[in-house]
Length: 393
Ligand code: PLP
Image 1 (cartoon, protein in one colour):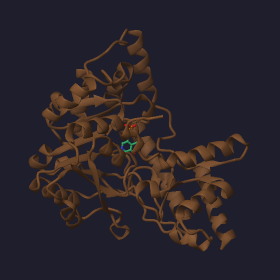
Image 2 (tube, protein in one colour):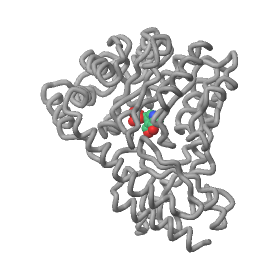
Image 3 (tube, protein in one colour):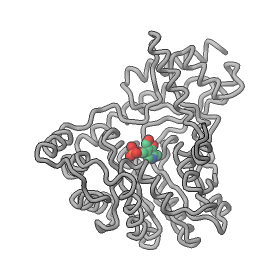
């Protein structure tokens, strides 16, 4: 069948292969523990669900403005002001169907054929594909393990060309869990202003920071940096609302207007009911957000210690998100595998633990373990990995 070349060029998700295999094993009665999840394992807090039910009962079941309900955009402005001291007007906000689609439409609006977007490695799997779908060219800069997988301003300067249109910063990061400091973001922000480059700041894991780390938005650096930043965020990870599909962009109104035009001809508007629920999420109690954050931190502290004593595994302790991203190259070698992808497959087939190979994130020496699952499951999973490695050495 002849399909459009733009889809033929898409790389299939590497996470899917292992997830499909894990599912197959489970269906055949194997007790597989999945550490692949990219979403919190808590249900959406009750008061948010109640607000959605109320909205439906009150008849809020129709289309809304393409950029989202004015009252939701106002709630987002209030959130940005109180959490990050960032002043945005409602016409500088667009609400979309999840941060993922907001990012997708942003690339459609920003990029012309051949425009370059700098993507730090390790990256979230969708960035390169979304850039390519907009006919842009991903330019990779490797965040080195010795620099906590973060890119430096020197590396960034070297990667900039006359075709560079944007840089993506994802802090806290999926998959590494690393958090950029204020100073690092200041240096990066100022360089982008100097070279007139857009900064796409994906802050979806903003609320999940640990060990005293704080989230700082690059838009907070100064007004010039803010003017070059499109801040992306949403409720999926902070309020455990992945299925509701609400995310947003905050940035210059010309960009927001074009994204709104695109939305008007693609999604029309994000789901009305989910928008009402999101207002309750931002305006109601933030206690459940903190409760979930604390639970993630507790799990991290417990399993990190158990993970790093496994022979051949080294891991920088993450400060955010809900992933561990250990280097498993040595463990693969010790157990007789020539690469980490094969090691991950063996972990699934023999130890019945599903982890995501780092190759999909541009980091083939690593594996990604999500701790968005119960502490009990996590402890069993890490024990299984440990026993698997020792049994093969
Ligand atoms: N950005 C990053 C780094 C993510 O990990 C995800 C989800 O996994 C998203 C964006 C998209 O989130 P959503 O579309 O659910 O808002």
